[in-house]
Image (cartoon, rainbow, N blue to C red; front, top):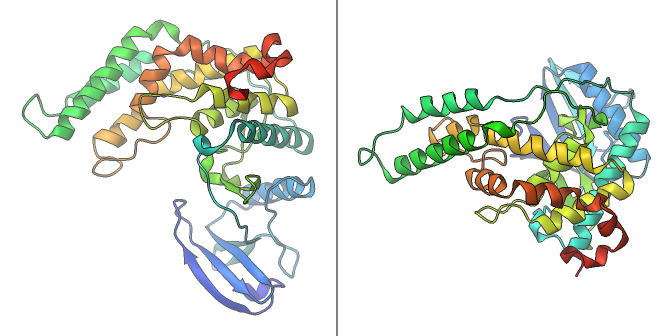
Length: 342
């Protein structure tokens, strides 16, 4: 298989273990190292569009890996119904968003803005959709009630069962309290092609703290640009406990994005409102975490963190203001007054 590419004789191929469910290998040759990924029954049209996009972004000088063409010029090589793609190996390490300085947070936001600008310029226009479906609090509440019936009563289960019941009752109370805060069904915003999963797991950093690669382009999708800005910030700068979001880092990140791909405060706040609401109504994550669908103790996941949902609900106005702060005149004229730049 590796002979299909002009990379010389392979000195070895070490299997890699990741969370994508796809087989992949680190390939060593005299000319360098490469990353080989396998696609099981690939959607050829989708994969080749992704390759065209990442190649164009790479040619723009952005830290995106373009697939290497095989001898025949194809970037997707097929064999026995499976597809194979070869990339250059990228060095660097992963870093959590909370490890970044405020300047690095701003630079990371600017990088996402540059990606959005390039995607907007290099890809076909996306049809503007006026109708964005909104989850219903009543449906989420009904699902919580159903889950509570599966939890042993007080004193009849384990300590984890007791925690499960408490988390579910907390979510039920929040859904009742904020039922009137549902975002509107109709929302006009800037839409385009999006990375789809711009988070710490798909970023690699060099020794100087710069991003050496943005990975994870299998999630390439379309949607509101402000939505990706907010989702990315929420994933990058969420604490693992009751501290919620680091809003100073959020403001620095959004400020960086604004410098490369300006939107407006209204779009950002609408996206914050929707992201919070979708997390509030995402009770499937509670099922995975507490009722065993994701393993014995499941996987909380960034969308299902009960502590973050509770914090965000208690600080909704503050969060709306913090995300929109880079678009206000005071913040724009005097960024040094913001704690993130102290």
